[in-house]
Image (cartoon, rainbow, N blue to C red; front, side):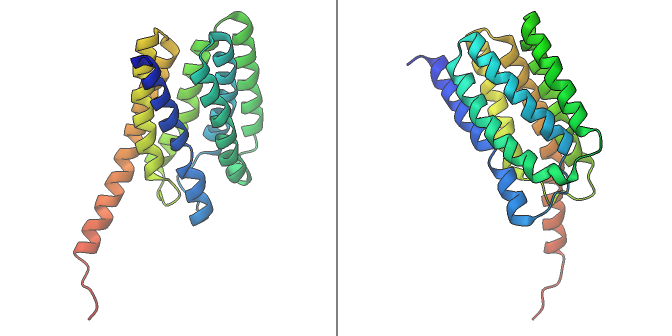
Length: 199
């Protein structure tokens, strides 16, 4: 097994693990605070685009990852569906049309990078600016940053620019969300440390 194959399998494993904590947190806390329905919807549609990319590029790791990610991101979308905006479905359909057109024109790679920006970006931004992050999973973003690093490395090893770029975007978005989540945890611990305990 080559180094690239090992890195690709690690990226696949971490990425799939990344998509599990957030739906579980929603189910456990029933909180949707700090989450973006449209970002999740765009992310779901983009995973369908990655299925096409995996098929056309012949990268089995990408194809298998995208298939599993489509199911997991679809679950999260279903949990957030009640909070969607009036135009969210139209944006998702518009994005799906753009991906289909880019596939026909041979520009699917560039569109998938953009898809991660407009899919993951709003989710990271929602976590950053929300007054409450009780619905946001810390582990989702820790794993997101890790998988971004692995996908970027895999892209370099395979000479696949879309994988390099999406990995880089994933790391940037994860850093944004984690800075807020970790800051919130540190603030809460400081408050608890200075709160007198009952006898």
